[in-house]
Image (tube, rainbow, N blue to C red; front, side, top):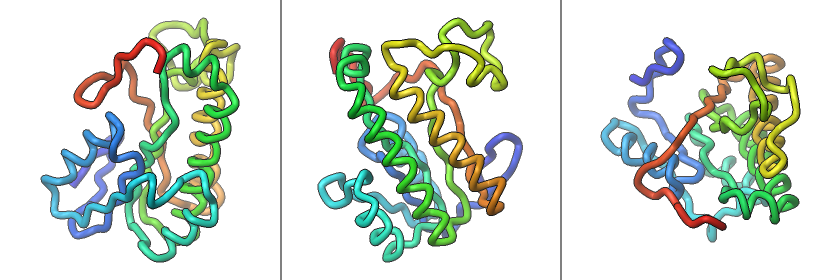
Length: 186
């Protein structure tokens, strides 16, 4: 049983897909889920491009995961975020849109979308409050990434509101650990 925001969700015996299982957060989720009685599902990027809508819809229809942890994203440091702006916004919006819609279409019981603290305005009051999202300008160097993350958060909210989908978002902050990349440009 997992507790998220004081709400219990039973994972036992469920098919659990971790999108982004090779990344730092996705890898941590996989290591933790391996200790649970779940059917852990992962797929390599070369086998499933999450930016390819048709491929994602087909894979979800065949695999039908019950629970999805959406940790997949195009990520990078300040230099990458600032120079690959189009790739960061396009890839991250495509990943979120494709996976969230596929989860909905195939009756997923739960989806957790990983946002980022960069969604908050550059000059937001500290400590950060959830209601400060969209109240001011974002940090310019990672604005496209932040906008894509905000779109994913709002998409999960919309599916929850319109369809009653149990889709949630979490905003991890100050992440570091096994699998982290400290390269100054990547």
